[in-house]
Every structure is written in C-alpha cells, then in structure tokens.
Amino acid sequence: MNLDWSVVWENRGALLEGAGITISLAVTTMAAALPLGLGIAVLRESRWRVIRLLTTAYVEMFRSTPLILQIYWAFYVMPVALGLRLDAITTALFGLIFNIGAYNSETFRAGLRSIRTGQHNAGMALGMSPFQVFRTVVFPQALRRVLPALASTWISLFKDTSLVSVIAVGDLSYASLQLRSQTFRVFEFLTAMAVLYWAMGYPQAKLVDHLHRRFKVTE
Amino acid sequence: MSLAPILANWRFLTTALGVTLALTATSMIIGIIVGLIAGLLRTYGGRVADVCIGFYVDTMRAVPVLAILIWIFFAFPIAFGTSIKPFTAAATGLGLHIAAYFAEAVRAGLLSVRPGQTRAAFALGMTRLQAIRVVVLPQALIRMLPALGSLTTITIKDTAIAAAIAVPELMRQSQIIAGQTYRPFEVYTFAMLVYFLLCFPIARFVDSRFVRLAHRGAS
Image (cartoon, rainbow over all chains, first blue to last red; front, side):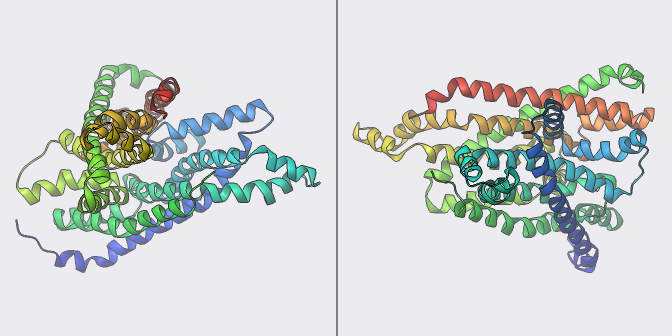
C-alpha cells in the first residue's frame, strides 16, 4: 500500500469548507430546534386533548424512525405530497430541525416536570400571572437542569449532520466522499474525514462531560 | 397514492426487514459483549485501562456512525489488503459504536451500587471478583435495563445508515424499489411505518419490564 497524504493537504480548502457547512448546519438546526422543542413541550401539557395527541404523535414518530429515512422522506416525498420544492440544504435543515426538535421537547418536558408544583403555586400566591410564573420561576430552573441533556443532544446532532450527505448537501462527509471518487485516494480521504470529525467532536464530548458534572442535580 | 409497489415487492421487503433485524441482533451482541468488558475494565481496571477505554468511548461519541461504517468498509480493506463484506463491516462498526455507549451505561450502573455493599461483601470474606460477580453486577445489570432498551432502538435506527455501504436492509431496499417504481411517497412512508412499529413497542416493552424488575436492583 502506498499512501500519499499530500493530496489531502492540497484539498484542505474543500475539506475545511465542508467542515464549515457541517458546523453551520448544526448551529442553525439547534437554534431553530430549541424554541421548537420548548413550544412542543408546553403544548404537550395543553388543556386540549387534540393538541396533546398531535404533539405526542409528532414526537414519537420522529423519535422512533431513522433520521436518514426522515431526510430521504423530506427530500423525495415532501415535494410530491406538499408541492413544495426546496433546495437540498433547506430540505436537510427541515429534516434535522424536526428530528432534533422532537428530542429537545422531551428534554424540556422532563425538565419542566421536574420543578415541583410548590414553586408554581408560590409564584401564583405572589400574584404573578401563569406566564410570569413560567418565565421567571419555572423555566430558569428547568433550563439549568436540562442543560447537560441538551448538550448531549448537541453532540448527536453534530454527528448526525453527516447523514445529509445522502441528499448531496456539501458537508464534511459529502466533500470527503467526492474527493475520494475524484482522486481515488480512498484511504487518505476517508481517514482525513474521520480525523476531522474526531478533532471537532472530541473536545465537545469532553465539554459535555464537564457540563454533566457541573450541573448535576442533587436533591 | 397506490399500494401496488409495496404489494408487488412484499417478499423483497420482508427479506430486507429480516436483514435489518439480523444486523440489529448481531450489532447488539457485539455491543453488549465488548461494552460489558470495557465497562468493567474501566471501572475496576486501574488508571491505564480507564484512560485507554475513556479515549475509545469518547472517540466513538465524537465520530459519526456514517464515517465509521464507510471507513471500515472502504478504507480498512485497503490498509490491510483484505476484503470485507458489507454486512460484516456494518455489524462491526455498529457493534463497536454501541459498545462505547453501553460501556458507559455499565460503568454508571456499577458505580450506582453503594460502596457499603462491596464492603459488606468483603466483611463476609468474599474476594474482589466474588463481590463484583455476586453482589454488585446483578444489581447493576437490572439498573442498566432502561439504557439497554434505548440502545436497542438506537441500533435499529442506526442500521438504516448501513444503506450507505449497500447492506441490503430495509432502508437500502426501499431506495431500490422507490427508484424502480418512481413511487417514493408510498415506499418511504411504508418504510417509516415499519421502523416506527419496530422501535416504538420495544421502547415501551422495556420500560414496562423495568417497572416490574426495578425492585430487584434496588438496595
């Protein structure tokens, strides 16, 4: 086996551009999935049965099917079913946001439920409106508790962005696979791809461990 | 909307579902065996084992499954001058990936058994190995059940990624039928439903079992 690593260095621009798209996909998805998840979590506690049923169905559907299939579905079925034709990257974002939104909603729901009802009652007794109680009493405490779980979801999301390469979004994995077929330097580019993911993900995994220790709930 | 493409290919899809289940089972077996050993070594194996296995676990947390599968299938054979079947590559990659997560569950389970239990076992004249085997591990295994349940559904969903290295499982064969019949809507929606019917009951079943067994892990 003769290896030629110089070809990886020559194509560093394309690889780093792919890595940049990976990062921006993850950031955009999380930025949209946090409010979506919170909204769904609140709606699941709704007074109306229909709303509870619909949001539960959404969450369970997205949590029980593979993300890669959801992305395919968004890419091939959404245009047919809804007559909505979007470019690959927007489609990928839709798939990722709805998937991560479902997971975030479960995290928020667990966090909000973990705050004892006495806290809510105390807020009401002080004359706050239900929204004020939520905003100033319950939510800040819940957010602190769910931070480690959200960070874990972030790590999975960061890895899961690699799946958008199946619909030809030019992220790190797609860029590496393209370079592999153009140069026939299979070993070099696939190893470079794994190493780049590792270099980005490893420190994040360590940071998440730190957050888990820092915000551990002890009662 | 027509069910013809699914009805015409039902035998093809049933075989594909069989491959998905076989891949899930093989990956889980590899994951449980490797994960159990890694988790035990990391907890009781001293400093060096802790650092080495910690590195392995965090690497698996940082690198996407897609990158691992593609690397094992395309790059590994080049480096070692062998060839590897898609199913073997997928089972190895998914197994080693799940093993890292299971190792963490094992460690958390073992550490959750209070140290007083081990000390009591020593006081009764047990050796270290006996204390782990007879006292700590049985309790820890029951406490790991919920983690094992969610890892099973994660594995089922991750087998869909093996489509990228042409393992003839449900996702891959759905792509083929969708391409042949030009009916992506029906085929992908059907695949979505099948995955849902696989994952959703498993999660519920393990949870209900755990409720029945939880008292045996309590101390």
